[in-house]
Structures are given as structure tokens and as C-alpha cells.
Image 1 (cartoon, rainbow, N blue to C red):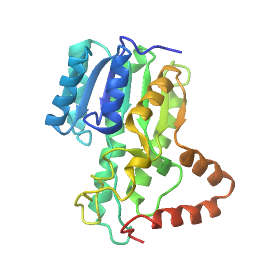
Image 2: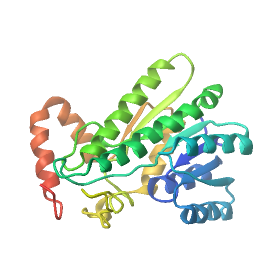
Image 3: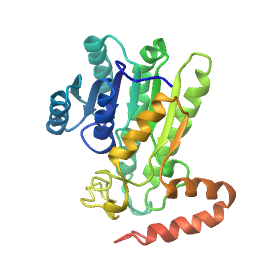
Image 4: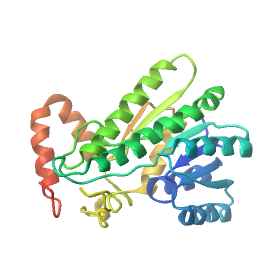
Length: 270
């Protein structure tokens, strides 16, 4: 068990959802925070709320799909705190469309944010995290273990994330680096509202019952605890654990179950 008190923690995608909730959970435990997001107004509001709660935090407007933004984020963190202990790659975007109908720019956008954003941030933060034998965290998805119909780009980005983090862990096996792949399962957040449709426009509303999902705050509790315990993986929700377990034993059956489940969404694309 390693407390995150006084640790310098970078959280991307921190203006809402899991990122915002994780900021409050980590701040409550005494972490020093660097929050990043594209929406400056929302980001500033979160930072102000944290400061009102007595948390040491700064916000840096960042688009993780841009390499230069990621470099600036790391450099500003070092100028402010002089170190980086934990990087939480949470920034992400989803999509919902059949592959045969989707504009390929949609998949490029999803990959640029979900995968390349992780790569850029990890590349520039890693030397500093290694100095402190800290943590690299990726907020992945069950879709990284089981491809979801209508989410080809999203599933591909999360599968790529999982492979990248596993390789990174093994490369640094003897250097004290902690690498965590976290899969929250279906969580009440903004990601489905901002998911991209076939033409690249935002979906605008969630096709699922958000009230029945695990809250972002509960996910944040599990996530911070997993970081402190230096776990290698975190899979949340009963359905998430069930999907991974059954898929290992009966992948063909799980294909049918996933198809049936996802096809029941309102306005399903298939």
C-alpha cells in the first residue's frame, strides 16, 4: 500500500465524469493535482471547486491528441511542482455507428484521443514517473477485451491501449514502475452524450439508462485505491467481469450475447 498523499498527479479529461471525480478523490487524500481538459471553462470551475475544498490544484487546457499540448502539460507540471508521480490517462471519446457507414475520420479522431493521447502523455511523463517509481494509469474499457458492435473505433482504441500498457509494464519490470489498466464498465458519465455518430457529429444524448450505472464517484474510489495498492488491473461492475470471464471460456456464445444486448439500445444502428 502506497499513499498518494503529497504525490503529484496528472489527470487528463478532468473536467467531467471519471476524471473530475478522481480529482476530488485524490485531492481528498492529499494529492497535488494537475488537471487537463479541452474545455477551459469547465476545467477552471473544477479547479476552483477543488481549491475551495483546500486541495492544491492547477488546470491546463490540453488537447491530448496534439503532441505539443502534451509536452506543454508535462513541462508546466514540472515547473509548478518539480516532479510527476502519477499519470492518469483518462481523456477519451466514443463513437456509435456501423463500420460500413462510418466516416473514417471518426475512427481517426477516436484513435487520436484515446490511443495517441495516451502515447504522447506517457512518452513525455515517463522519465519523471520512473524517477519516483510512480504509476502510469490508463482508463480503458471492457470494449478493449471484447469488441462491441457499433463501436469499432472505440473498441480498437481501447484494445490498443491495453496492449501498449502491458508492453510498457513488462519493459519496466525491474525499474519499479507501476502500470494499471482500469476498466470501469458502463459508468454514468458524459462519454455517451459526446460520442461521435457516423458523420462525426456528436450523438447528443445517451442511448443507455445512465441512472442504473455505477457513478463516477464510486469508480474514482476504486481507482484511487487500486493505484495505492499498485494493482495491475481493475475491472468494475458485475457485467464487466462477467463479459471478460465468459468470453475467455465461450467466445462464440459471448458474441451472441453482446450482439443481443447492444441491439436493444434505442435507435441501435444494427
